[in-house]
Length: 584
Image (cartoon, rainbow, N blue to C red; front, side, top):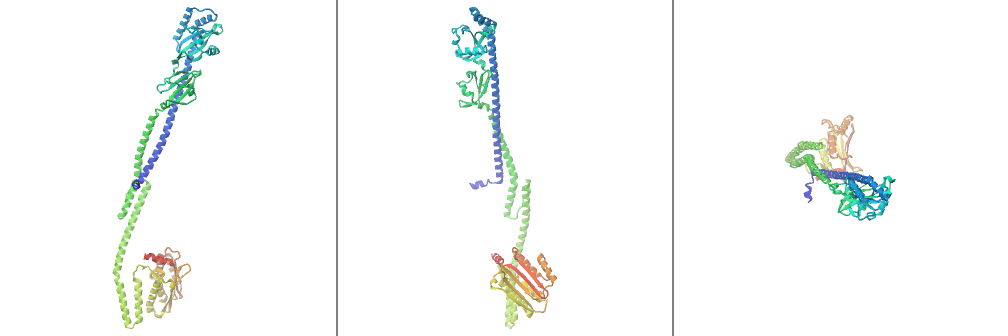
């Protein structure tokens, strides 16, 4: 499972996933915030519109009530009605024909007015004058408290509420004041109004419910089909009706009427679903466009890297291939350029190493072929030695033996050819001096000092012999007096190996010695025709084998006619480790 997933763990897919996650998160936040703000805005606008509608409806209720007040006032101030009630006030009888005339006047007024369905007239004794009915007393019609309220209103219209005999109508009472009798009470008028008169809203489009309450909070008009308690809605902003939430909008008129508008919340935000769908579709379209752009961008970024990676894989097949330049971002262009430069330099180095390896192989082949010559030389020298011993030339035979050992030590090849034990190096010096003694005779003497504890210490091969040779040539060779050459190896207290090669020969001029020291310090090569070539070669070898050792010391001292002293100080451990490394 992990292996299947790992192949998708690429830079391109990571960039693509990161871009898409960021886009989805951003779009989700923007969509949520936008929908919330749009929803709140739509709901707020709808609430403001409904509240404005409630204010307008309240104004209309006040207007209707004023119209009702005007109609009833117009009836009571009619001269004929005033005259008839004045006669009744003075206890003068009213004939039936006068009552009929009175009824015609009232009917004509009602026909030309809106809202008042019928009017009932009562005397101050609460006897009914119009219309003539079987209920001659007012208390058979309404409660006595309304009469007291009408008296307190002093002629103003008093709203009673539902007609107890017919709930489809509402009643209002007004006292009849005689204008010519100092507005004394002459009777009462009860106006009956159809409930539909107060239907001021058409809420069918929003499935709204409108409830009109009078001053006593009794419903006057309502399109709500069920029973509802107005008191439970008066102090609420929302209510639950048949598992649906309704917003309650309340508005009171100046005459004390209360309008309740119940609007379903779902109706307020029904346009939001279309907006939500539009935003979601826009978000999906944005994600698709962003996916395409992200895919293009990720390919644009990673394709050069993939090409460069594939080019690097070709290194297993041989030389490093260069990657063609591509048009991309500066960082990747710089990476591509750096790789191409590295590939060119590496290919150049590979070719050089390859050619050197070929040359080394050829040299090894030549060396193998040339091994016949050393063996032939050893066999020839051995034959010469036995021949000299047979002829009694013992001294000359010893010289041949020393020469044979010197050649064997110098040109022999083994796995540890670069490093030898101090004991072997001192033996080689002994052989060399034996041969030199054959030439110089008693003019050359030597003294070799090597402690037993240092015999196995490893040093670079032929490190001391050039210094001894230099002492022979420039110390003893430039004078006729005897010359003694001493070679010693000692271990100093801090684990260093000190080797001293000293002679008491002719020495070196001061200016010549200074030139040699400067050449050794700067690393410049000394002319082969001058003195110091052996010193230069030894110093270079010390720098090569002990380059990482700060304790490497090479020092030369000399005075004219007093001899020359060369001191080498190297670490013992370095020689052992280097030898071990070479053997491995």
